[in-house]
Amino acid sequence: MKQHFWQGMRVPYVTAWTAEARPQPVIKRIVGRGGEGIGYEDEHPVTDRRHEALWVRSGLAPGVGQPDFRRLNTHRQKRAMRYNLCQVCSAPAEGAGGDERTLHLLGATEPIAEGETTAAPPLHAQCAVESIENCRPLGRGWAAALVDYSPLWGVAGVVYDRVTLQPLPRPGRRPGELEHVHVGDERIRWTLASFTVISLHGVTAVSRDQLYEMAQAESRRARTAEPSGAA
Ligand SMILES: [Zn+2]
View (cartoon, rainbow, N blue to C red):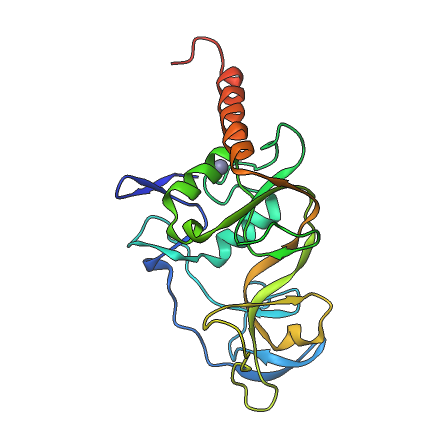
């Protein structure tokens, strides 16, 4: 996967590009295999539906137009989650702590809790340090943890009202904030999903000092792994 740059900075693999925006079809009420729910008139069974939820439409054109750092591309987010790829560089993310665990970094003011759900794919320690130093929202606070395992939990999306077919109002949430809906929740058929959600288990918190040490160890391991004589 080609690494894209913007104004001298690496653009994370999962970041959306403006050329990937697509018009979104009208939401309809449909009767599917699992019962009633929302759907599209011209729904494609493979690309528009997964885990019983209806999915937003998006193009795939990394590097075209401008990166939109506030948004993730749904296809690359799903792929990163499915194959445990680093959300920044897209290489396999295992081994950030020198073992099988994966590293997770969330914008947060509290430590990552056992079983916490997230739509943020894992990342390397060096990629996490780069994100903390460049990504403005993370400047308001972040939490990092090494995680033993992170199974599929559900989707992040917008739940629609069964009667009005409009997004359900959600008091107390910021506009645009997506709801995490479990795969076993009957509301999943009324959800317009944007992202895959995993849950984090076997959580060990990582402090700022530990994260920077991990990043240095990771860079040493990468140098050792290079074939001798490499430039
Ligand atoms: Zn990485």
